[in-house]
Length: 342
Image: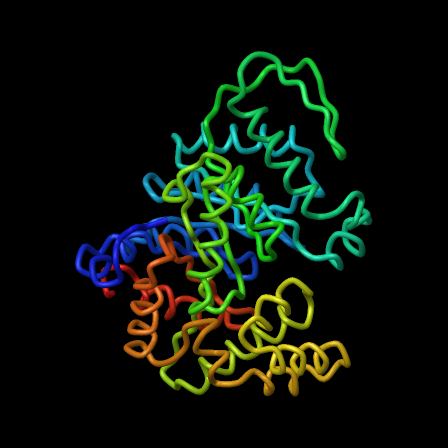
């Protein structure tokens, strides 16, 4: 976590120099989008994965077509790949990209794990699975000797570590999952935690990191920042409303994160979404929710909003995310929010 004040961060440009971009598989040319991000000075390009495209294959293709931009997954879930596969994947992409790779993982959602992957969400529970997956993946990557592990979820023996030091970030939301970040991870990828609440949320991580004998400053905070730029500000904000409604309606963890600041609003959005009233769910996302959960507006409005987000003490590495359904605005958003324009 950055120790700089907001003013120092702006003066030095350290946080604005570390703006990353999430490369959505729904873009017409995701790899070309990442190549353009490198040309525009973005710090990093990250691939996500739910359904449709492998985030690993895409980030490997981006690695082969770029030379300097950092790369990462944001995120791979901790259910569908074993720790051994995650470790081999991370080590392979890191070698192919000359050390540019960060492994970002998370629990995903109950619906995705059960209905898409056909796995049991609570065996033993998502946080325990995340803890053991990250702990064991770290051992497989950079442990010493032959790895032995005996946990509730995984038991392995007698395979050597890979000798590869790859940072691991975790997309934790609830307190128990944030303790996993505190104890094990190099970075934290929050999503749908209102920006004004990120400081308090990270203070909890910092407290538990210190209890574990770790320096909280060694944990990078890299939040998703949903961003949409349009010549018409209302159009940009509508895309943000739809994005927030999708996540609040589909993931209980996301609903809880938003509800910390907007309890009634988050409940109304979730209820309407789950009832199938998706336009009404988006309409229930208030202007205040949009302002604290994303960046949306004309080019100059959006740039100032992103500057304000980047100035928050807790944030080290903001990740620009194109909202669901806003792919037609992706190129303009990428260009207008380029670090050189901030």
